[in-house]
Length: 261
Image (cartoon, rainbow, N blue to C red):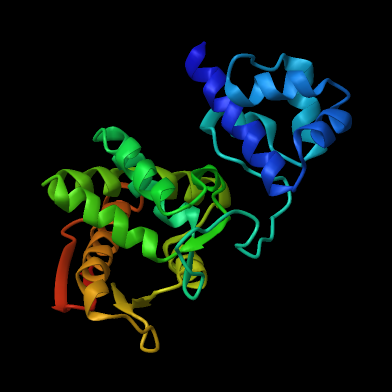
């Protein structure tokens, strides 16, 4: 029960901040008291069924999926500037959507590192509530911090393995929901991918860093780790979802992989 209340608390709190309401304004919109909103947001009170569905209807949230996952899923595609929440010491020169780093966040939770990650972000003035909005834009620098944390705890291998499995689950749901064949799946990935080219070449899939993506020497290791993760994750999707046999992941260079199918 306490776990569920904390999940609801973050959902209510994050939604209010996303739409730039204060507690009194949200209370008026839902026709409840400000005190009730305060209790909902600190987890001392959970919403009843009527209030939950009213809240989701008011803010266009998909009630069942949002409840099941704890992430904010909107019925209509949301748009964001990436400026609705505090970014602290981070910049938005290069951004990535939260959904792209969800496998990493879920792995941090699995490995008991999520609170360390949140402390790191809060120390930099970053509002961690935004991490439950899959379509929200966040700084690319978060990837560096995530990989750095796993490395500092000497959990690199466990972290990547766990992240690959979480990626597989998310893509399986996507493929089933949209009824994608392999060609359409690769096209969909490439259209959503901010840093890599993902292309089907005959019976192979090429994954490489886009030519105009600029990165510093300090970012190089993290980018290579991210690319390696992406290649491994895609090879697992091909094996588990599309039933390909004898898949080989071949490293062409530090910034390019070929997945042979």
